[in-house]
Length: 252
Image 1 (spheres, rainbow, N blue to C red):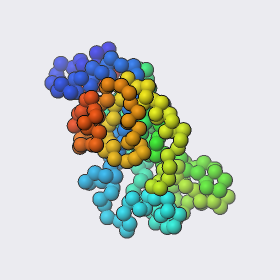
Image 2: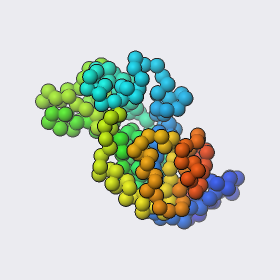
Image 3: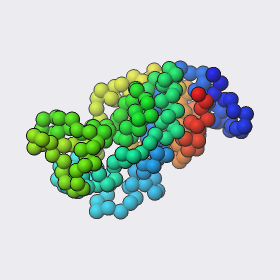
Image 4: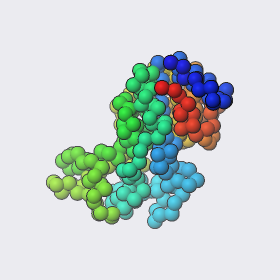
């Protein structure tokens, strides 16, 4: 099926090349960040208008650290509920198009730095969540699972407690915590085996996640981001446009 159809569109050469690569490949991997979900109304931590520039009692990087979680859990959960949970958010155009590409057998996997679960909500199956998910929460004592509703139902500033009395912790990777080795290994496997690697909506400034791009061995590294990144010069194809605008041109 021709992804370049749509004669009413004047498609710029860089975007046309992107669509051609997607059309011709059946071994695509997507690596994404906050920009994928900003189009769903979820603030970008590091954008000018995003979460990290809003005033709070402590810098967000401090609040979202393991040491702060341990020492000031009430403040952590107040911030977490107010600023990190978006239960009504819906998948963006990019989320939906990626799910469609996977269903067609063209996309082999998604590696995301996001914690919102919107890729799965859009229908994606193979999703590696490097930083965890707000949809999963576990008791630190007995390891009982709790869904998002538990966090939403508990009052702000109140530490969520399991039926056994243990504290319930979101299954998200906080600052000072390491990434899951199994997720890292699977992400490396996907990236090393990819024909086309699409990197979108990420500043590529968060490590070790951003360093995974270095494992790509092909010659079709596509970088789509509205602002510059440290990896721009390494990209085989660089597109400084909104993700949804580019992915929206992919035909079914």
